[in-house]
Length: 392
Image (cartoon, rainbow, N blue to C red):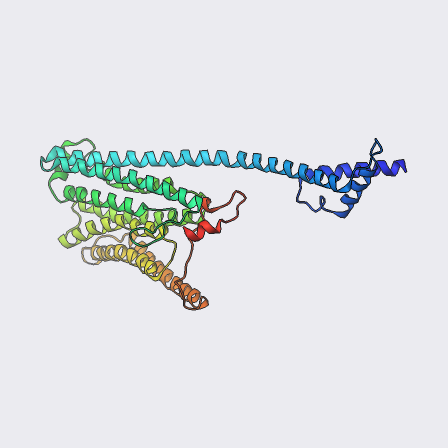
């Protein structure tokens, strides 16, 4: 009898230790554990009888307190470094955005002011407006993230789309393109470019580098507002960014030929300049698409048309160069054809998908596709905050 009681006590100690570490496990709620605990309660050293109800309540309270303390410490240890890392990363990319804006705008202003005395104050004022606009954008975006994290009902933007992770990013890029385009066009279409070649260190090469600073600026803008580094929105934005980079590189090779006076016709020259700035403005479209929570037919057509107005004119210019002026074939001709075919197939595929979802929904509201569920819409254990998702 004594040996049997000792074995039961050892087994009860093992089951209680396992239940304290894993309160939700089936071991803690098994009938065998309950029988052993009742038997141990009746066989205390003092001979007193402890009631079954008081013992079970005491064990439940102690196990719940231990579980709550363990989860709280684990959540703190996991979330605190991540939040600190993300905040530092976001601040770094925001600082890089402002540095690139100041550097590019300042150099272009230097080119314009040193060789002409007309409206030099207006160029500096334009840069101040752009920098102020980006500062307001970052503040509005941070406020939108806090509202979505708390599950508040948000208003729509001025164009009617629901606010998401990329809130107001398209407006920031649009302001930048509107301010940068006149400066570059004025330099390309006047004698300022020749003066830059003669009197400025680095010459035209420095001007090319200043033009290409738009690519790292777009990269810093995307990474300054990304929340989930492994989310669907980040992958989608990175794919759009790479596509825009290829379009800018394609058009910039023709701009280089224009700077070397290798574009013979005036119409081709204006086409090249126009397409370059259209490619520079295309991120406004897909940033606005990432802001919206609904994928409609107009987004599909806008995505296809954006690729069409960039790749089709470039393909025409290169065909003229090859078949009319006898220039060598460029690999970017195949890039233009490949992008046009891919965008067309993507348009057809997604139109069919949207129509299928509409039929399944009974022809009611338009099909809604979520680009991603951000980290702010997740509970501490990874479950989706449906209230925040539906209202955001």
